[in-house]
Image 1 (cartoon, rainbow, N blue to C red):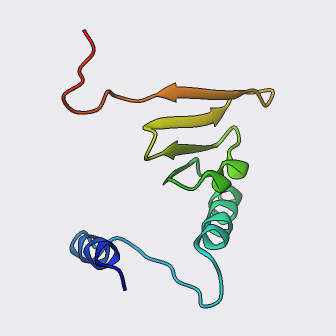
Image 2: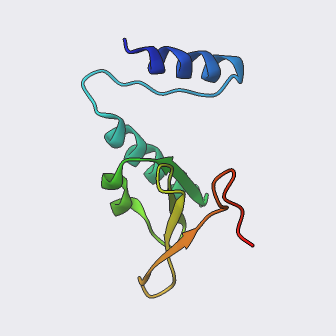
Image 3: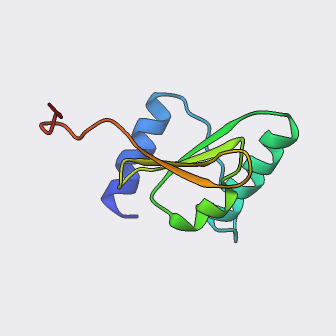
Length: 95
């Protein structure tokens, strides 16, 4: 296992966050299933990832925050895609 994953697992365990692993399935497939189940229960969903493939899940009630780009992607009514920049990176406060 790569060192970054070990650190992430430590953080997840410390904060008692839920994790889901399904053998032989990729993470994006598991995330898509969880999004479908959450929407079936009428939850709004926010996905935080660097994986652009998950943009196909974006809808009126599902937003995606692209962690590496610090950008949120969503859709307004009518299906038009909207991109909003988030807070500036540390040390780069806008004036």
